[in-house]
Length: 120
Length: 106
Image 1: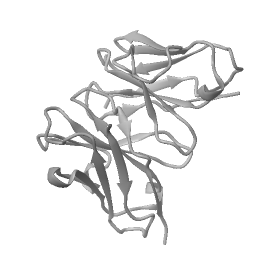
Image 2 (image 1 turned 30 degrees about the vertical axis):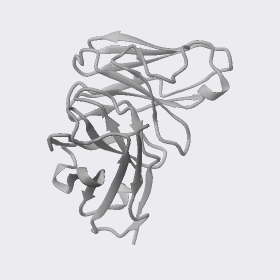
Image 3 (image 1 turned 60 degrees about the horizontal axis):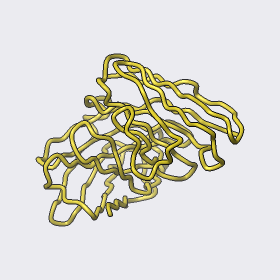
Image 4 (image 1 turned 30 degrees about the horizontal axis):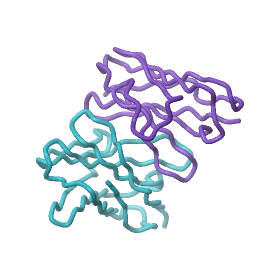
C-alpha cells in the first residue's frame, strides 16, 4: 500500500523560504520510472502543479515558479523535499505530494496535504 | 504550456441524474488525460487515467472517453457521494496542467 504524508510549517512570513517534506512508504524512488510530484491549491481555487522528481533524479518544474523552486530526494529515507523561496501571501494554500508510477502516468496516490499560510 | 479548458465550471443536479464534463487541451495530448475527484478538505482521488481507464476502486458508473484535444468524463446515475469537484489533468508533457475544475452540487 502506497502512502505519502506532507510535513512542514503551517505559517511562514513573506520573503521567507518554505521547506516541505514528503515522507512516503510502499514504493521505492529508485524504481524505474517512478516519480513524486508536488501540487498546490489556493483556498477555493484549482490545482496547480509545481514540481516532479523522478527515480533517476530527473527534475521538472512549473516554468512560472522555476526560479523559486528546488526539489530533492533521499531514497534511503523515503523522502522528497520541496523548497520554495521568497514566499508571498498568494502562495497560501494546501500543498500536496503525490506518487506517479511512470513517465506520462497520473498521480495515482496523494498525501493528505499540508496547509501553509503566508502572513506577517 | 498545454492549456486545459474544462466545462462547465459548476452545475446543480439530483441523485440519479447523469452528467458529462468536457476537457479541451490547447494541443493534442494523445490520450494522456486523467480525471480526479476532490471532496472538500480532502486530497484529489484518481478516477480515470489514459482518457478511458477506470482506476481501481472507482465505481463503474464513471467512464471517460476522447482523443486528440477533446475528452469527456461521464457519470451515470449520480450518487450522493459523487457530489464533489472534478479536475482533468494532462500528463502528456511537462509542465503538467490541470483544468479549472467542475463543481457538482445538489
